[in-house]
Length: 60
Image (cartoon, rainbow, N blue to C red; front, side, top):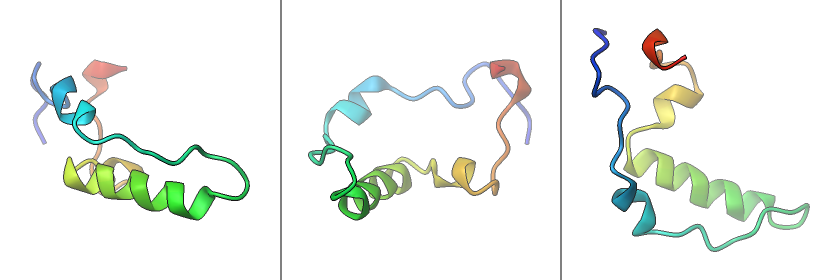
């Protein structure tokens, strides 16, 4: 994958439209995890968590 200056740039308005309504603690982990994974999948970011996509070194 070629890295460009716009790779990985996400408009913040996308993330502000859906809030994760569950606070993370010992009792709510599974529900919190489900909401976080759903948000990541909606924005096609889950590949960065499971190493299916590599991040560009330009951002590090």
